[in-house]
Length: 245
Ligand code: ATP
Image (cartoon, rainbow, N blue to C red; front, side, top):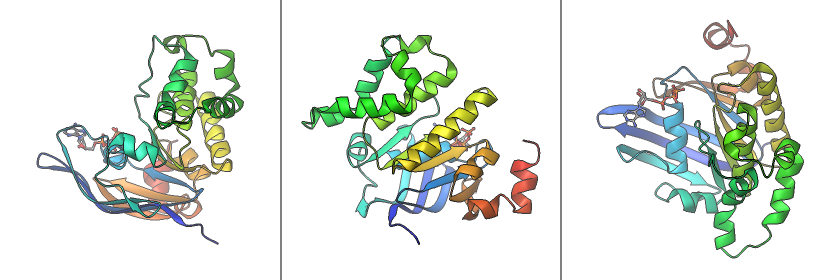
């Protein structure tokens, strides 16, 4: 039994000058699903996520349609997309190092606060329940956190906007294996809270384990897609993405 389509991407193309970084990608995420995008370096994964979030660098040009819960968001700003329920945790995490953990989190709810919502304390306690370590370190400066804690803070900040769809760009990048395990565990817990997740990962093995559906992006094109459990047994995927890890 399938839930409704939350994110519907059709004919997404991204050009950097004459370079076609993403070529006519079609992709769907259903309500409450974890969908993963795997592929080699330079395949266009980050470019695709940034385009979906409305956060391409100024040189980038984007074509195609991006629908969120039935609404065309293709030409909306980052802020408008966040307000409609889409949050991106970028690869570089982009925290404010000289601000406290708690203040970094509150920035994530800034738009809702502006829109007149004052109950960010509820959302903050939800985030602290998910990340007890952030609670312990709430008054510590973000710049003094470990790599894993920074990733948790980046996730927590995105959650403060109460997203329906969370887009994660390589959340395991640069983290020790134990921390990677913890991050993937948290991703599963997030799904249980009802958030849909679009997960871009180099760690194909872990990504295919948590995801329902998967896309392989190579050279800006979707070259393979299917149920994650099936892709994990596909010989091409095993040879290219699971062989050595
Ligand atoms: P990685 O995992 O290394 O980040 P990726 O799959 O996320 O790889 P992208 O970073 O999206 O790939 O890059 C896709 C293509 O677009 C690459 O050929 C890259 O060189 C190019 N590209 C990315 N950003 C820009 C930019 N700002 N200007 C020009 N070309 C870019």
